[in-house]
Length: 225
Image (cartoon, rainbow, N blue to C red):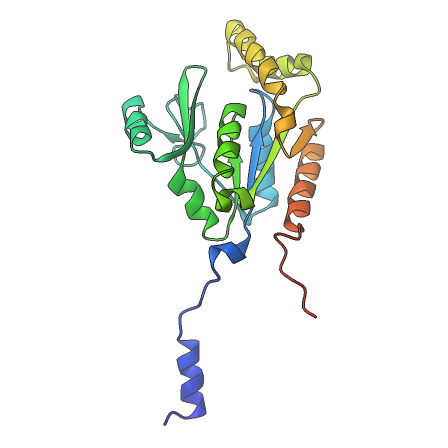
């Protein structure tokens, strides 16, 4: 018969039992904005402020911009490779924006959610619509999803930001603004509308959204009585 110390040692050697994914209640924070709306900057600041949160890295066929790294900013794929993955049904959502393809791998998103991690997803308005549609059919996705639409207060402010960025020709900026006007009309389809002011104020309000969603009764652990 094992003595008490042996029993304690045996218990300590047992593998940790991780609660099922349904009990982890992770968040999928989806942030969308018109091109040049500042969502990438806000996402970077949010990740720095919430080290417990991780990014869902999307795939794209566009060329990397200066400083961007494969597997960190995007998975940069050749068009043929992207098409092969698309035909295999690997993407949760995909879209063509300004001539380039973008897609979110199912394995990338659900793998992190099932580890209990809060996931941050940076997508365009078209991609956000697809994710919302998928959530209607998927309880796991619906339970985690929180959508936020970030936008400057006016198209004029957006135009100024695009010009200051200095990455696009005037003709491209004009095209982006035309698309942005259509995207702005979609704000009512999101859980939250965040009118951009300053970077710090945008971050403060975004953190408040995350905290509020964490305290929803559907996500909070039951109190003990």
